[in-house]
Length: 331
Image 1: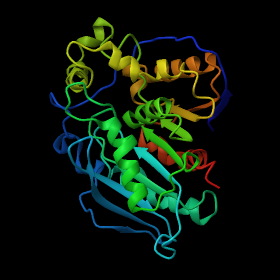
Image 2: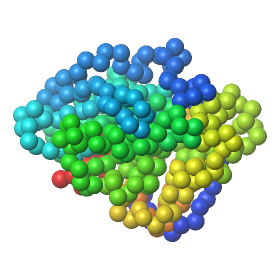
Image 3: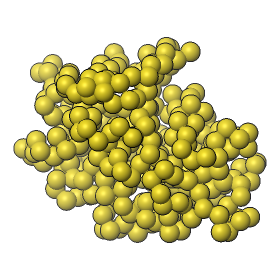
Image 4: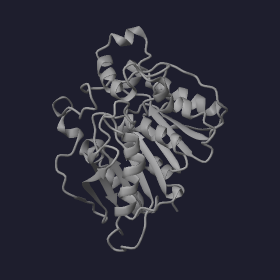
């Protein structure tokens, strides 16, 4: 049973230190199939037909921000083809490292598309469109070296394409964003930067970086095998040497103090058996965000799930809570 707290607070930053393990080359590399296995991604990109009449499609969209076509998947509700004039609320959901836009559909993560459909068929949430864009290893940021403007891709290209091609409603009250791990960070960061565009944000097992910037870690962490992976991903994003202004503009612990979040609904959580607690103290980073938001008097929901794991497994266990939260203004 999750321990749930509804919290408010006034701003004062509490900074701790956190590092996460990554695997990538010197650029915004693609996940390694050989190291992590095909089971984290779907190889068959044919449409998935669900028993209640919903479906998941896989495709690509043009992206001005990335200068190329970029992949995505989209969940379409049962009535989508029956009423071609109907418009729908949209939930945008961001994947984590070593995953992609297909990962939420693979069996190892618990048949998440059917869970979404079941919530619709039981009337727990309204009919929605759910979009999973490919984020690579970008942390959903605009890279300092120009290799990819992933924040612009998510906030501009994806939204514009979905509203034009899938009849998504354009009003803020019908748009929310969620994510897990790297995507949990991305969802919270993006919603806090653009609270006028999203009604709600949910970050599951979010990676919250602490210290002056993500390179600011204890010396003992710099000797770990993960630190090189971490540096290779963030040098393109933040520059080498690091541009502190870029990190400050993408740091949820600073964005939480903007004074502009009162109407943004915020949820984040973690499980106490998260595999990153022992090695990188992920729980401390998430607790620090809770404290900053509390001191800033920003209403939010912080949940701790005893004995539960990291990432998609946590999402699968609490899909109903997450989706109800993200869809609360859609009815």
